[in-house]
Image 1 (spheres, rainbow, N blue to C red):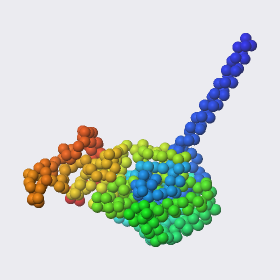
Image 2 (tube, rainbow, N blue to C red):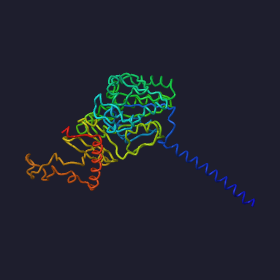
Image 3 (tube, helix red, strand yellow):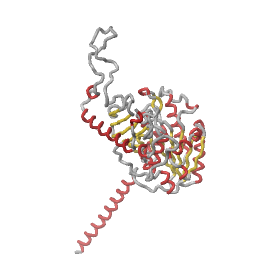
Image 4 (cartoon, one colour):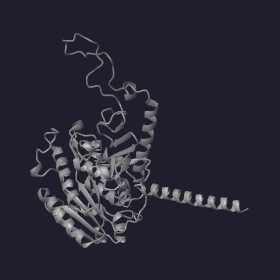
Length: 428
């Protein structure tokens, strides 16, 4: 009997040790989850926003412009490889960032001063931060401050918040002023949220700084952004959490598109986005900037069935809409445009060169028969290609799948326009 009691006692001891070990392992696993919920009070959050900075030319994202300081931050943080802007414009994108809403969900129809406000059930990120006792700071350069009265209503009703707006100078001395202001903020407050905008374009000091790596003058601002980031990383305290991003990119002339020009190309929509927490994690899934509040608050990301982007509000004639599902990207342009619809398979066509919807327009061939090659009146081919559906021309073996995807994304675009009550006949 005594032997049985001793055996049972030893069994309980081993069981207790095993249970303790398992619990410790579970706790360790949970703490390594970058997106697990945590206590968000008492944090110092610094958002560094570089206006108009595309991700594709950056070394961190497989490009040709060296970005040692972006790489440095990503090595210990979280790098979002497929962060998609919800609009190729600052005001609309920033609205999405602070509300968690896509542009078609804002409830706005135009760009006019009278058209403002947000849906009643929308709780912007600033509400949450303010309720948690954060001191809120926005640092804008002077040129943006001049336009702030125009931008304010399109982003939020700023009067509802106790925000400190601090003017900083043009980009030439912007980094120096930013460090000074951050030092003052950090010395006075234990928990704060600071949103800093660095203006579009390179300052005079950095003109030509990318010429050893790139022929594109736009890339000068990538070099400058990387230097600014490195300077800030070296000067601010370790307890400050950093988020670095852009609101949209820009086009370098692809398909005749210059700068951002309110287009939905990948050069305009794919943006850099890095957080200082995450332990070197690479997030390769598609993520939208509407998830900014979740990322800031370290909550689980929304599993979006579709990701959207818009070039304008519901009633603007310039409006084009993108619906993205994984590798498939559908763009609808208003009736009467040269290409009313676009569909790209970005896995095999990352530069959006092959439109998988519409009629083929052959730039070289016509229906005339072959003739003497020196006779400029005749075509080098007798194939009749003009006007045929692209599915008859392009050599794919999955056209049934492509057509199913097109139907699905086309219906989704129609749905979000219909719930806004958009009448396209006004724009024909």
